[in-house]
Amino acid sequence: MKILKKIKYIDIKNLLLKNSLEFNSEISDDELFLNLKSISNSSSEDLSFFSNLKYLNQLEIIKAKACLIEDKYKEYLPHNCKPIIVKDPYLAFALISSLFNNENFRSNGIISENSIINKQSKIKNNVQINQFSTVHENTDIHENVYIGSNSNIGPNVIINSNTIIHDNVSISNAVIMENCIIKSGARIGGTGFGFEIKTKQKIYHSGNVIIGKNSAIGSNTTIDRAVFDSTIVGDFSNIDNLVQIAHNVTIGNFATIAAQVGIAGSTAIGNYVTIGGQAGISGHLVIGDNVTIAGKSGVTKNIPNNSIIAGFPAKDINLWKKEVIRNSLKK
Image 1: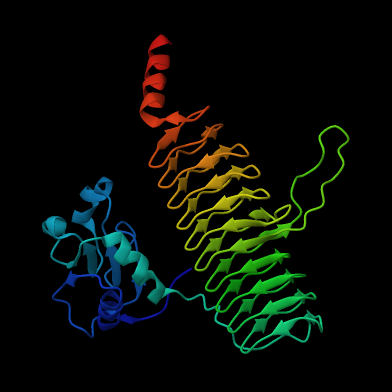
Image 2: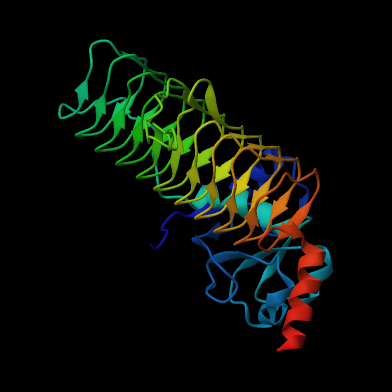
């Protein structure tokens, strides 16, 4: 979608200053930018960024008006593109992208006449609920919450302030902390995959789900409620689309989990963990802090802090690479 906002350089400067990012440029404060674009697709009215050496040779053909770039690479820019010197161009790009964002999901305070609100729910000031959404009993929705269309909220739910819930979301038996984003189709708080193995007798789940503040849950991701206590996703965590988080799982703060990851029940995952796409993690494991799990890995045992693992069964990534090389030489 073409972005039509005109952003002045003074707005970019103020945003970088607000976030304590050092920068330097000779661009005038009134200079306008129409889009934020990649190096190869930029035009003369755009702002671009360079953060990956893979694209170094493309800098000589960049058409953007300016480029977020480290000082040591500015000499590669042509004269038509002015440098904005920053230490971390990708972080600067991430922050500035908000200025060009046309998607506005801030609450307008309007509750649609076509929504259904249970009388036993509590809705505070400036909450927006779009058409055909339902709020069930024992639900508490705090200030400035946005709820899209066709969503089902409750029972037994607390949604804290400034949270955005997109269309077709189902949330029950959950606490969503402030400033979260729940994308379309997410299912949070349903009963987990629990039963007695011989008779297949279902196990009643009485726990809930807690999503920490400033976290994002991707489209069609499922997070099951705990059997007794809480399934937990920590603060500042980013969960991609189509992720399965089973009952009683706990995930620490600042987690990054890519699409199609599956985490079996009662596994405890530490802080600052990164999990690549399509990785699978067995149940009742302990994954330490600062662990990186490569995509398509199969984790079957506990992982200590600061590990980088890959393969199936997952092991130290250097051992895995050696095995891959040995196996390729045998062919």
